[in-house]
Image: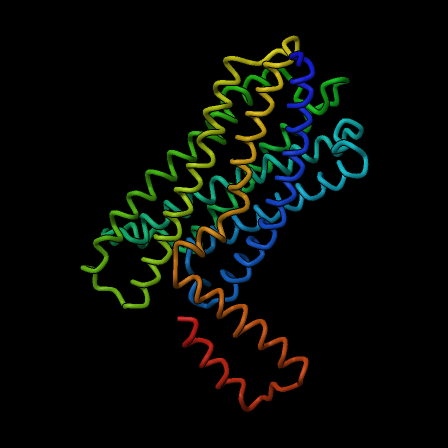
Length: 334
């Protein structure tokens, strides 16, 4: 079998792998991120928790990523490509949305880890600095930076024949190649999240000695375990892709060597699918790492949403028993 036929088979496999892995991850991602948003916004115990706020923003960003992925899959199934090479507006919009989501998701994960470090710290001054109002300001600042940064990138993108939708400005191309992908959206958030999650874990091991209400202590332990598990998965999934991009930048595969180029495309597809899992797995990581979170899922889905829907359908909610129902729900939530 010639190298050209092998490379063609590899490229065909890469196309099918990218399509089906993206479809499967999008389905699980939409379900998981929807449940994350529902749980962290409906439960009172999470309503004023800063880490829960960061996770909610991250889940909204992840849900947006899955929606874009589904749109690209549908376009590919209908037209044979994602339509970015045929529409300059869609080419630029896709870049703007994608880069904004990457920055938001990565740095919300960092913010959750940093917040857990401050929340479990012994120094009272650090605890007083970190408030929900500060968390909102930090989130607005990071999302605004991501949008402005992505708009600049988007308006520098053009459709080039035989290549597709790419950034044509040489200065920003060098910036994206050597700083944005390997550092700003690569090693920097990985290092920040890893360091602060480990420091938070060290703090929470000594949390028993602190004079805190038992419910607050349980919540701190739960959130630290969830954030630490999320960061471990985040590092494991994002680090291989960042290392691969640094390698690919220094050793690019040439199209003049079909087999080498096909293998490079296969490796890129595998590592990219790993980093894409970051937008899918947070709900499932939380569910596995926290027994209390599993009970809270059951509470929201079975004892809140389902019963509420059934009561509305059967007209069984009466003013005189609403207060009794709510009191039972709050007790089960804790």
